[in-house]
Image 1 (cartoon, helix red, strand yellow):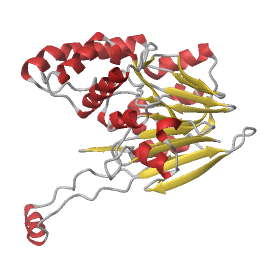
Image 2 (cartoon, one colour):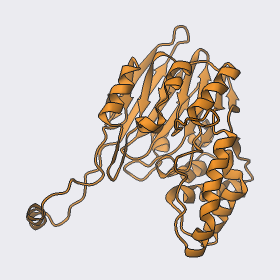
Image 3 (tube, one colour):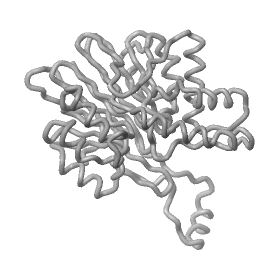
Image 4 (cartoon, one colour):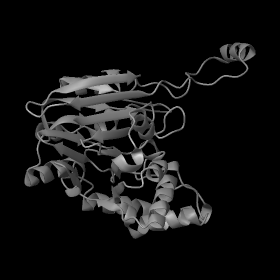
Amino acid sequence: MFEFTLLGPGYGECVVIHYGEDEWIIVDSCINEAGEPAALHYLKGLGVDVATAVRLIAVTHWHDDHIRGVSQLVQACPRADVACPAAFRRHEFLTLVAAYADGAMMLQTGVREMAEMLALLNKRGTQVRLALENTLLLRRNGFELYALSPSGASTIAAMRHVSAQMPQAMQSKVTVAEPTPNHLSVALLATYADCAILLGGDVLQFNDRNRGWLRIVDLCADSNHPKSDIVKIPHHGSPGADSQEMWNHLLSPRPIAALTPFCRGRVLLPEQADEARISGRTRAAYITARPHRSRPARRSSAVEKTVAGVLRNRRLRTPRFGRVTLRSYCRHPVNWTVELFGAACRT
């Protein structure tokens, strides 16, 4: 059985893949309502012994919504190899991690998770697998997982961003922000028998064939990688991650798509236009939860005063967690069954 599961609320995402023989991989991490890594909760609910069955944990990039809880994943899965962007082993990023460990600066949650994860792996003596374009990360029992990005040009651009902020951050203890735009995100290609799944991470579209989706398209053409039946839509369906060449050259006609929303402040992804664009290119598209506002809409002072007089303790209701699971039980032809849980629905 080949299984693809996408987990996520309104902020955060995680992918779990089963490729037979009770072996699993986890891509990225997010936290569920109970504060537990969603992947661990899901696998334990299936009766999976995560300490022995998880073979690889892959981190696509260090944005908070993709990495929260990853150090707990690594702690719970001692047999799993860990893969992350090669930039995480460059001097600039290791300097960032060392500065955090010495208390010399403040960091966002994503970098703190990376620091704790790398410290744990160093203590174990575990070697990190470095994700670069066209790198084979795992091959077992007919299953293969390739990193398709980042390119050398993207890695250099991201490290320039980190290096430029380091002196000020270490002097005044301010937070080092993630590179914007996101140059480092890893896209992954998972293949098993005649099935292929493209995991888009947060890879963006650049007008430069040395970076982003255009570089991946050229790379796959040269490497003869198969087209994918399923795509994890990159960057929550935002227009900046949409690439017509990705759809034309990396995916089979009318694939199945899955995505997670992004809801932070005033940013709500995907927008209605994004959902329409994705649905028009697929035979089915699923989302783990509907986009929702992370804070209530502004109300008049009179209304606020009335509500405050009635309700002393108020908090915004957190939407239910969602799960999209696609399974294939046969190889020829590929037939996918769909299971939706919680807030997940079809777009």
